[in-house]
Length: 152
Image (cartoon, rainbow, N blue to C red; front, side, top):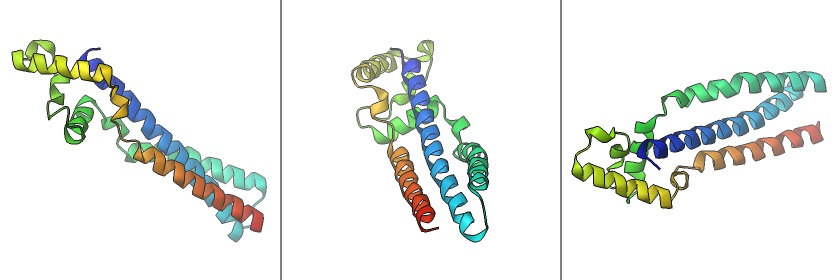
């Protein structure tokens, strides 16, 4: 696998994780807000559903825009790898550069990194903490929504 393909795979995986965290977070919060609103305003089930869908439809794109999803590129992934992975030793930019722009040392380093990421897929090193946090937030807000429904 070439260096640019490795980083493109990383970009796609990073963006999918960000989208998943957005969907989980906003879905749980939308249900919780609509159920909480029904405590103060007399809402039917239909009204709660409409409020929840409206929050979800507006909240998800807003979350993705605020998280700078469009700014994630190959240099973002390379910078993250430089900071978090000792095996890279700050040389992840050689995966971004064109083959013609590299000197001999950088070419050998690029081949080493390509071999490393072929054996150890890049997605293993990307952060999954936001997805775990979104999942926990989803569960807590969903339990809160059910609690409000049960008590109401």
